[in-house]
Length: 116
Image (cartoon, rainbow, N blue to C red; front, side):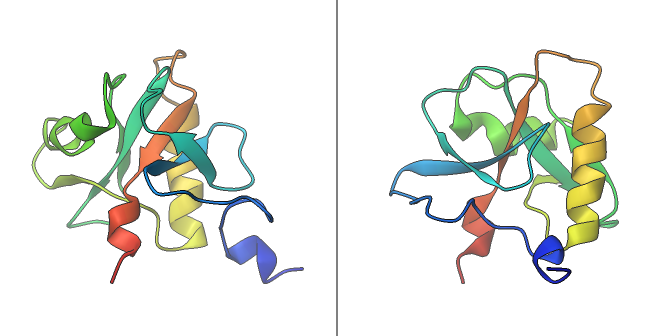
């Protein structure tokens, strides 16, 4: 049970189809499979390349393709990313929950970073 709390994945039994996006919601206990075309209340998860502890949330996206550019606009070294550790997930959730834009309920994660 303790190990499960350190590993984040989608909810058991959820199928990830081609074209789906990976997201995280404010009240999540799992990563969420999201419809990439439905960007309602969506922002991008951005991480600082020099300090993995720094996470920021973009403003609302009008499409999932905007995520990388939106992260770059947050400042030097900010990239569209995905948490690599349980600690990074906690930091990202804190950034999401402290976002001043209450319309942002979920963030898009860079699932392409998972592909080797």
